[in-house]
Length: 249
Ligand code: NAP
Figure 1 (cartoon, protein in one colour):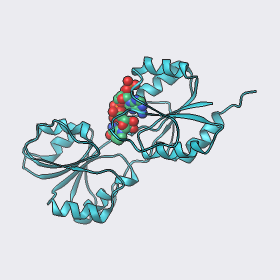
Figure 2 (cartoon, protein in one colour):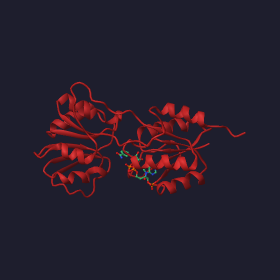
Figure 3 (cartoon, rainbow, N blue to C red):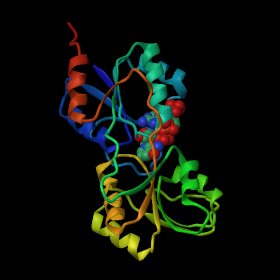
Figure 4 (spheres, protein in one colour):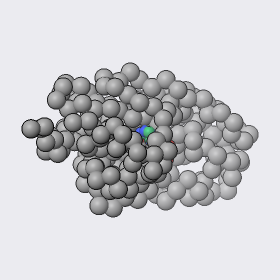
């Protein structure tokens, strides 16, 4: 059975490792190609978009894909929508592997907003020192609030962004709470901005903000396509693939 694993997350990589140990389940991992130097993967990998729903339907048919696991980032809304539509059209079973959201706990000072424009508005008019951890592709929204000083952490260089006060840090998860606290203190951060990605590897910034009593602007996840079976653990995705797998007679 050929499985298409839509990746770009820690969970997708974990499932790829589980699949690498299963020669009876042949799988291809698909990455969008956003990261210039992605980590080495344990299974065959293809890189780049499919060409919308139509392109994905053609790919599913051409490659005789028997099951799709959508393990893209919770904010990769277009890919998830396209996968749901294409699988419906092509009659291919689809599972979404989605990690749980972060939820605020005692001591957290969160403002939850629906999108990046909401995050910009939540920063307010008065100039602040902002720790921006929303990914480089979302930075343009903050050009609407040039009065703030931004500390931006991304995996790849941010490129052209029209912000007068922007300091870049190049780093990739996992991060550590003590180091996050030290960074926020050294940079005299007033507020943290993050998407609700739910990743354990990036969670320490929230714990650091709580420990320092700092406010956090949290961008809520976009809605997911309806009618797609969804689970959280890579091991459960493997069990689903075993159920879907009908051995050839
Ligand atoms: P998106 O807006 O939903 O996707 C835009 C387009 O990129 C899709 O329509 C598709 O192009 C292509 N694409 C996305 N994921 C793909 C995949 N796994 N394999 C092949 N093509 C893919 O997604 P995005 O926010 O740009 O995210 C792109 C990738 O980065 C995803 O794999 C995601 O898991 C990862 N990522 C995203 C975020 C985030 O915050 N959005 C954070 C960390 C990692 P076609 O229409 O041409 O098929």
